[in-house]
Image (tube, rainbow, N blue to C red; front, side, top):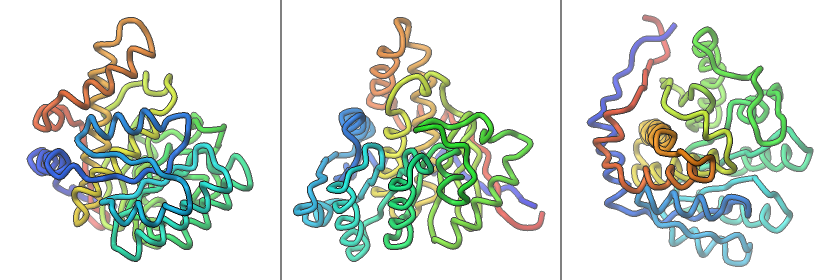
Length: 286
């Protein structure tokens, strides 16, 4: 069973303001398809991006940073080495790391790399679409490349059951899980949030998930003592920006991508949180 857990707009506003004020340097080891979009959305939300995936410098770069973002999108042996080098250094220095296990389950290399990362690196947050998360944790997601499968969708009927399953993993790995889809779940060992913000147009462009993960990483970097709250705030804020972009995008999906970044760069934190559609609950007996 679950009972309500308070998450106030004023608290989320403070977390997003911290992101703008602190401008955390966010070290991204991401993929060449979406690196530019990730950099721009980080700037739009108020963070400072740096993209560095050469193993020889990965440890030095992360030591200068407030957060580390690891994305498995275009995986290669060089970037894998950099991920482990940066991840170990981040852990040693107490710098929060975020993992986006893009396409996990689609290949042996991708799946084994993701699981090695989980076993060797402590991640403050893990964000992926619901199929990726299910494949990573249980090996049961209906992975189809980098997109979520309909069979894995979070619905009103299964969201609590899904949250309970994710909770066990979150507790075991001492992390916060963000599983995104038509509705998003943000789960840690004690509570979960259901987020109903977002636009279906985000599924029609490349990189929306990568951008969302970058936003989560930066918000956690700015608020390292409130990982779950920061992940909720960043995920919902990104969803609101998607809704704004959908209203503005008249010409098509390329316009939507631009409008998404525009929305992140122009909306004040109070405007974003006023539009949140977030329900939070605490695990345990009512």
